[in-house]
Length: 367
Image 1 (cartoon, rainbow, N blue to C red):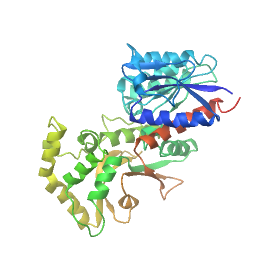
Image 2 (cartoon, helix red, strand yellow):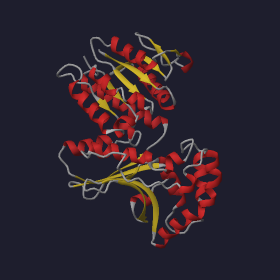
Image 3 (cartoon, helix red, strand yellow):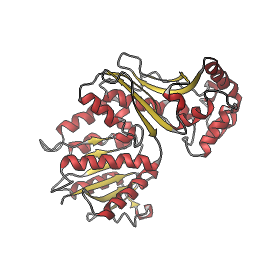
Image 4 (cartoon, rainbow, N blue to C red):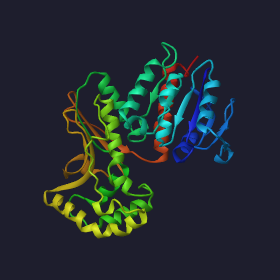
């Protein structure tokens, strides 16, 4: 039975969770057989042509390397002479994403939760797509899967891919794509009678729980949602770009240029009245506030803070869940995908699922 050789770039929180899931799969000794032959961080790497023992792996085993990523990719390429190797990029690096076309041209598969290659410049996106069509040998083209770039382990991209592939017409895709913003507004803007909470207090709790980025402004500025809208829009055939996508930054303007996260958090309470006014206005209309991303082929794609009726599915969301509604010609009543859209374990699940899809498509599941 053939073995799929893997190089993993980025053994951080998500990368570590993926290695644990791969180790559990290896222990079962079932198809498809997978072997991690290289693991690399930005400056360190470890390589083993026979496979790294994942049950014993620790990042302390990585050794300094002048070109850690290059060494890992070369290792998986050389160990896959009779098959094709797979590079899994678990970083959020622009520089690593820029290498995807090169890897694909060399016939290597790519799986990643890194949004940069699919939401960055259209030039890079086009290069990735072109390399998929020309890389490797004819009839054995490399594959790229990036389900975990939107919604972690939720089947969002695969659902959209199926809709497009079967000829359905996308009318609108609308959703709450950020677990952080979901948590904040699910707790802040609640339908019906509720004890009012201060916006700054909820952001502070979200930060303490680890839901936000180290600087919560990186969530509140809407750019993460914007990247996901861009990815979905491009998959739906739109030429979206972050440079032109309308993105509502809900960070009050005076707080945007403050140099430190700590200072931002200390001054956020000064703007509680600003957010309370927005919430009171929504409540007066019988609605709640939700930060959403919209893909609209007719030209209304955006990221915005919007009001929704208390009966709307977005209003009933709990915790930090994501929810995405696909409105299409065949699904005038939206097809809805909902669930945990963040976290190392579910993100690693999305990546692992993509790995298995590649193994199945290129014949690693059987002789």
